[in-house]
Amino acid sequence: MNNTSYKRSALASCTSSMILLSAMLASQTVSAHGYLEVPPSRALLCQKGLNTHCGGAQYEPQSVGETFKGFPAGTGGAPMQGPIDGKIPSGGHSLFSALDAQSATRWHMTEIKNRNVDFQWHYTAVHPATKHEYFITRNGWNPNEALKRASFESTPFCTIDGGNQKPSDSDKHNCNIPADKSGQHVILGVWSVGDTDAAFYNAADVNIIAEAELPGGWSAVGSIAPSTPLLVGDKVKARAFSANGESPQYSVEISIDTAEQGTPNNWSFKLAEAINQAHTLIRAGVRDENGTIEPVKGNNSLYAQKDSGVTRYEVQLDMKEDTGARMSVASQQDKYVLEKGLAKVDFSMISNRKMNVEATLFDENNKLVGSTSAQADSGVTNLVMDIRSNPGQHTLTLVGTTLDGRTTHQDTQTTNVIGEGAGVEHDFVFPEGLSEYTAGTKVLQPKTNEVFECKPFPESGYCKQYSPSANGFEPGVGAHWHMAWDKI
Image (cartoon, rainbow, N blue to C red):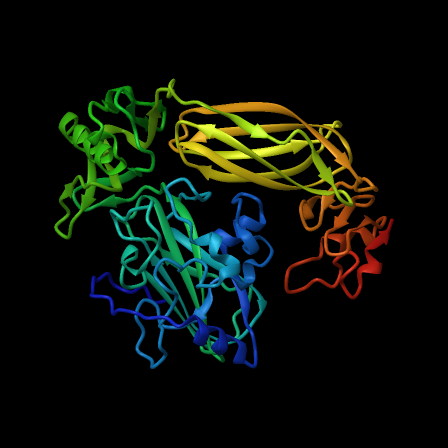
């Protein structure tokens, strides 16, 4: 293991050509695949269901992040070195672009309780490794901005020489997470493949709660990660905890007095300042090269002296409901007509706030037959959902939540659906609910508009064996579908 030293250096600018990238990857005679398993990558947690709305990543975590070598800048002659800024988690592949979304609350975080970590990869198609590297976000990084090179330290905190040998699932990379890192961070694991021009870039979202004594006797005990805009009258509290429970004497609360104070970076700065003014054994801010801790307008770390007894902090938002928010279904058709069980249900909604809305349609047996979601602006918004159902009275449910998450409204309307029904009942539309397929599960294959039933055990195990690149058991379509399914 080689733990590299910390340094900050100017990052070379990188340009990209997605056409050339696709051609390069397609031309490889071999294709390595794998993912960071410990701590789990963002894509692996999609497959496990802890992360949602992940696109194709939930089916192929082993394929995520494959692109050119050379992060952060590279020294080779390729037109692009490493992934494109803003597309680092996906590697620039549209199938995995959902992983590029970034906010302080978007992804599940793995708690890091010990700074000495055995990083471990799982390889589904193993090929020689020149090296594995581990980068981490800078102190004060903004968790609400897309990840780019400037988000990360310019040098890896750990580098493992691969010797151009084939790695194994049993290999562990023992690395120490830097002592000045605490709270929310992203670790970028990079596997540079030895016999192709590619590397795999895997982002892992972590919450570092491990204790570490820093110069001056300070220990990292948490962070203030600003994410939510606040309104006048809202409050933010940093709650202190010791080994014996909450320590109210070290907790600090602020109120939002102006609209300007309510912006995420500003209230984070105000809370950090209030903590520093209230206590001498607690500090909030970012450590500079001299060890001085000062607040910033962004992500602030929390530090404590041993004499305080404080071991961790939690940030709690006390947000008042937006009593003026309104939302409802504005109009819909008198009836919607099914053709071979399919129809488009279009309707309009009205709101006086920007909202994240989700519309669902249930049949008379309360079975979900269609859904859609969108971010609606203030005013009238037109929505449409594809449904697959049978004639009868349906229920349209519209749920809207203001963008700050403080207020939720719901409206429910009766909807009349007529015409030609879908016929055979089914439990899922393939590949929805893939992890729940068991013997007897009925799924509708939209490619053929046919229903298939999962065979009894032990063949039922094949029903879940599917990914966009390996679909041999896909009902009605795959080369071996007869081994797993019966057509109804």
